[in-house]
Length: 387
Image 1 (spheres, rainbow, N blue to C red):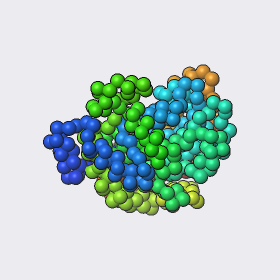
Image 2 (cartoon, helix red, strand yellow):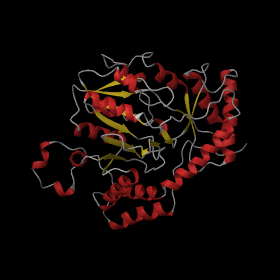
Image 3 (cartoon, rainbow, N blue to C red):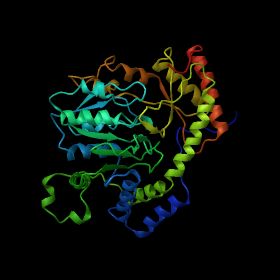
């Protein structure tokens, strides 16, 4: 089949995006303006939170959130090592210690039961994510946080539109973090958003985000040093345009998921995508398959190379943080050694992300799955794709 490379992700851009960005260019005000405020209001309303604070990225946003919550040197934050955007690295940037707990094998999100085992006298917060769009177990996570007097931070950098117990993701944390870099269904290139219902916390988040033009003559604002981590008017304009078409885009991505599900039935031992009992809807960030027990991380790497040679871009879904050099060398490593996070290691080695975007059609999806099957057979000696 003679095709161009099928990319892992393609942002959807049309006339609305061009018009909004051009309006900012023509205005001459490219930062600290009304477009950011409009994007914040619109996104808060779409998710269902009172306050939104636009930031430069999900990682920067989490760093700001930790500072606003008073979490820093000497404190610990329990989190998962398994993620795409690696928002948990903000814990290190804030000077606190990331304590890695294992994930729920099925959802890929932080396990409340396993997180409870990692809580100690220095623990100040839980950071849990909606992995690849699937909501975490927010009711038991909230109960765990309340029992121990901890802050609950929701990482929604991989999730838009998914619903848990009738509520949208992004509504469960004391502060919730979104990221708008690829492969988000709302893509602005870079950028992110913090959401909260706490007015005092929102005020502190805005203060720490950046020193605004109106503040340049103030001497009192140096009491707490802010970052330069705001969002530009150009990025916000692109975000507003993307948000206006987000519901339609999510619906179109659902059709691509259907094509994948139909084609995946050809694999021996295939299991349907997991949907927890309390979850009404999942919008996947990418289409992720879990390779069988015979596959290793090196075998997955070989499959990625083979698929690329056939014109299909794929990726290892996660490179768990506890397996990365900085955390392995960090001294008294709580949960940072391979083998201590059993399910994280299993999924981290064998999760393979396939393309998912509105630019795909049924023929391309069939080609992706057929090629994946051939590659899996060649590399894995006929092993079933799924565990």
